[in-house]
Image (cartoon, rainbow, N blue to C red):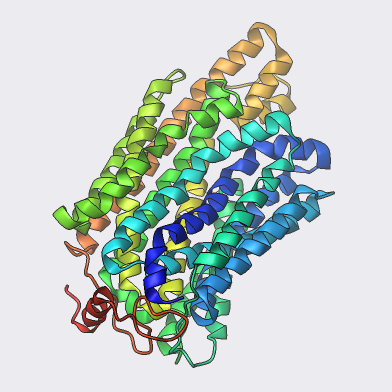
Length: 537
């Protein structure tokens, strides 16, 4: 397929890529609604239930950078299609799992497929879109990637109202089939044709192990606390491995990730911004799904519908590139993060009956995310050489995953601690019931229902009051992190995004297709000239 054909179908290609992203966004939350039915049918223990969710995140986060590097070397369409096939196959296997161990293994394998899909989508956008349209395309990409999050509870609630728990995995099948056909017909192959060196196996091992252990440590922190020995050891090992990866990449002849990228303000600033955004988003949704279901007593489907105001990101995402042109990258990212911070502060003031406040905060959050995320992702992708666009895209995705895992771990830990501290003494209750009620507001609801009568109502009211107090503390912590993101954006970002990638030897030019020929369009020539020019400071 020649470049004119690619450009003519670029918006159809983007639609195919967005379909792939919706799968990943849906899968992040849709499973949570099915866990009670899974536990009943498979007899899963509490630990097994946790790993049914966490095995996906662990493998997904660990393999992102490796998958992006392999996509650059062996072909981005090939990696995308392979990831979709794996995601489909293991989704079907997960739907018909006969025990918890099988479901955990299938979820881990789905994470491997998702890790192949996500970096390839951004890299393909850079290949098929001219420089002037990349920001708009990435805005749509960012909106689609996040839209799956509020849709997860809605779709999950509809399926579970009518079908068995395996249906939450079968929903992936028709979407993947359409995306596979569209990808095979429309998406051109692209790779770093000038990379003739050997694969950086040590760098791949260090990056995969470092990210996997980091995600594992964050998961353990959310479960067992930050002072737990396993948590501390995991985080220390992950830091050691990632430092080792950075040191090795500076010395490797054919590194997975050019060291120059980490020194580029667009790239490093964008990584910090995306991490802060994801910290706030995943942490807030983790808390609000519980607030809507346990405190406001909404059913899963009704709770999911009330998360939809975050879809204002669809309004912010198209505005983002226009605002970057007018007021600059630094101002747009700082503005978006400021709106997110304001939304979290608004949420922190919620009481036991503050539904309207939550709806407004979600709307502000979505608008801020729509402004900041596309601008940061576009700047990050623009900084990466075309030959390493897969690896650069993987760092974008890894920032999202690590920020999300960190947000759930930190905000979840603050929520649990504040909830227990705010709960009145339960000395008159049996020890087992008191321990359960102190564990979470969901468990307290179950204990209150078992007690019944006035004592049950009193326990329920006390648990709800304790939860909203914990919610306030947790959201203020989240607001503090996103406020630091605002400060980082103001200090780290250049005022305006540079137009070209870093000039790193051995890279292909933007838009170079599988044939190895140069992009002879005016935009391609302009981008090649920009890549040779000194970068602005």
